[in-house]
Image 1 (cartoon, rainbow, N blue to C red):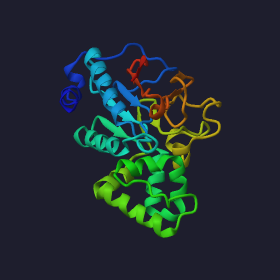
Image 2 (tube, rainbow, N blue to C red):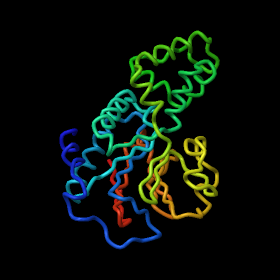
Image 3 (cartoon, rainbow, N blue to C red):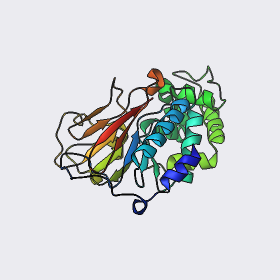
Length: 268
């Protein structure tokens, strides 16, 4: 996959006819075509399928300087968190101007476990962390239950830190909480509708806001996000919901958005 992406991401606006048509104030208007991908949760197989779909869509539409954004939750629940992290790190390394990976609440939980395994570990395990340990070859220790011995969690966290390596830990710690182009924003969980996008708190971006789905924003921002599992993606009223529970359904969803506001959903 890297070879076709290298060719397509290398095409700049000067190489192709201008994209888009009339601007619409009620639509997202990124500066170039964007592909935003929903929650992966350990499904490295679906990630590869989605990259193929995006590759074909870029080639078919002739998009200039396309951007690829992942909204977080790369780990836990599914079978290959380690593979997902490796692939995403590869993409951001090879295409730093075109690929962005955001932090999700599950990445935040993993980092919290590494910092304070005794306190943070049990919740992470309940939220699917055992699958991440398994994917790194660290079979889930039966002692890691609701009330584990402190030494068990300290040992597990140390082994996970070693498996991730310094580069992997630095990559996770450096993941941004948001990305934007024009009036299109991508975050993991949502945003406070009463605050501007530059004034959101990390907690809201990672865990969501109770009024995000119901209150109308006072600006023209469109927000693409994951976090909340839905039967089908949503594109309405300034919100683009992309989490279709890929880890359990096999349906990984992405949205392609052009500068004129037109969009298409891609799904495995």
